[in-house]
Length: 214
Ligand SMILES: *Cc1c(COP(=O)(O)O)cnc(C)c1O
Image (cartoon, rainbow, N blue to C red; front, side, top):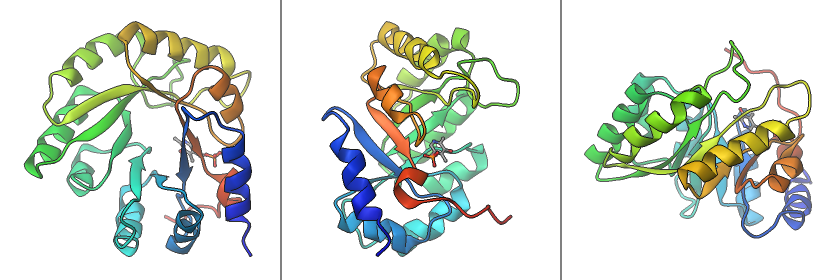
């Protein structure tokens, strides 16, 4: 027994009802997703377009599975996602927003999006600057196939994440948006305390990830 169902149960028991648990299945085989699905999990997060596609094909028989794309997204990969993912958490630039809207509209579909914010202004991190969020949100609201749901962040690896979670919540409130994607295995309870509605949890459900090949 792998323990996935047990760990899912323990995590869910600690989450308020308003919070959706996104099980981050990157690097995990389709069988692990299947096992979580059998235990009632429906929302799954993936980071790499190529890996996700293969997994989505292998799991196409699971009718209620909702994919969340939570990785860095190149504009030329958007076409693979169109009509197949329910959420994109990592929208951080207008060019990507336009391509998402164009590709999903072409499939007669729409997608829920969150704007990724580089809350601490880290040079090596994706996400738009806090000062640019308002303008990007306005632009996204004008695109037909995108449903703007909220903001997302990955706080710095070092230090207390809570001030960053709180800052993101204030930005989200100022924009009047319903969802906040924040919190991972190590800090999801802190994120929930600061108002997260989507938590992205991988290793605490599936166990440690093998190093990524390629
Ligand atoms: C990998 C990843 C997660 C999950 O991380 P864990 O520490 O395994 O819970 C969450 N969010 C993003 C954006 C990730 O890349």
